[in-house]
Image (tube, rainbow, N blue to C red; front, side, top):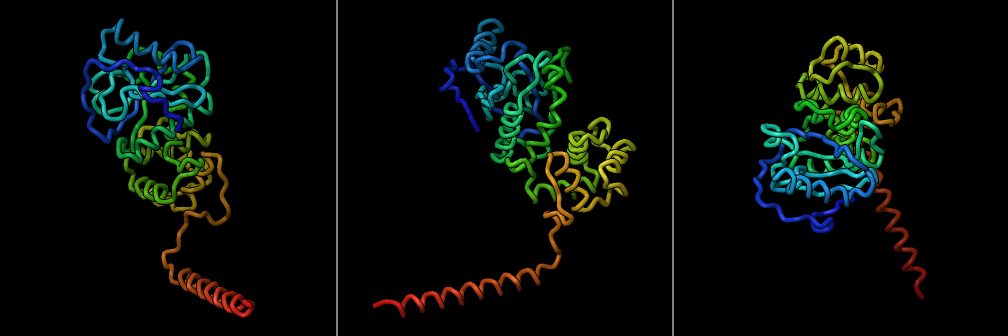
Length: 288
């Protein structure tokens, strides 16, 4: 992660701050609505405006994102943000993209950087893995974070649930599948985000398995009872949404009985050990 710390961008000290209780369940996305050029200079301008013009204690946001993939430290992971307003600020991170996304579109580097930031926060125990993501417009009378960025929020969330190479970790994927089968709202919403990213049109990501979600699963080729979605079908939805490809037998499908696999591994280890013994004996015979 290309993190630019407060010291590196020349932050002024905060006049006061409040601790943030983590892990938080929400992320709120904003945009600066100005130029996207020189994100470090713009980040300093944001802090100057927030402190000098608005009288706030610091820059409002926890983190910022530049179009070149920069991650700019704001209030950081342990301090309450001020970008959205209470009660949201007390249970979330505020992430601000540098630029005006009513006009321009977020770059792949910026989207990847935001996903990497969220993935890191999850790994550090600061953000819940079942987090929800929102735009400032969802709670305030504003166009923020701009229409072109707002439409990519579900993509950011989906990417944040990957291992960094564009594919989900197998353990996380199977846990999500089980929670989806139980119709847990946060898991259903995540799958709806994947369905939308894959172009299968599940309707709103509302956490409910309704007719449109079922129809989207059918369009994705995994129709049937959504409460019994198995590993192959679930993997097909997620991997396809992220641009991956599956073989006939997805790698997520782990056999319930691993005895045969373990026997083959033991046999292979025996062969390797035997060959190592033979090689060692040959080397000794060749020694003058």
